[in-house]
Image 1 (tube, helix red, strand yellow):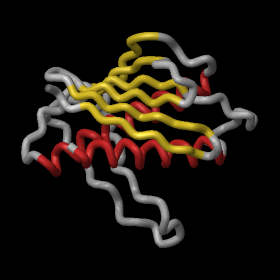
Image 2 (cartoon, one colour):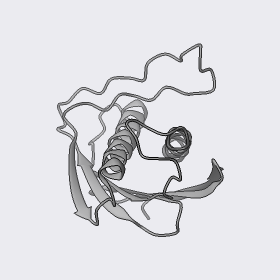
Image 3 (cartoon, rainbow, N blue to C red):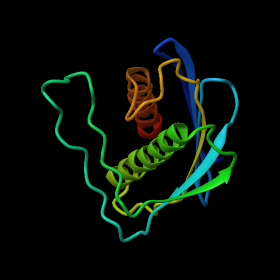
Image 4 (tube, rainbow, N blue to C red):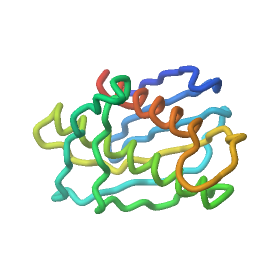
Length: 158
């Protein structure tokens, strides 16, 4: 049986579920706040691409665990659905790149040579009531870091 795990948490007032299902040829991560699969995006990376570790913690933000930076070589391929706006499309790309990087980085730490399977991310996030401007709204930032912590916990359970 292939590993599957999930976690649910309240993130900034929204019930958030994260499911991780490992298959022989890829890993599926579903992130939903509305009970749907949402937009599916696949992240791939060449096996020869170096993965940088997470930077040291920022003393000004002691509660935030630093995330490993996504390498520029990541390729994102939309598989199903599309984001409702350009802002959400950018946010979906950010989530997919970061989720994939967290998984690949954790796999490298666990196994000396990880195979870097493609990561398929399903995103169905609640719409923010805050105006979509440049950058991330505070709500989006809190949810993003909360989701990344949930993904990290699921990967470390393996």
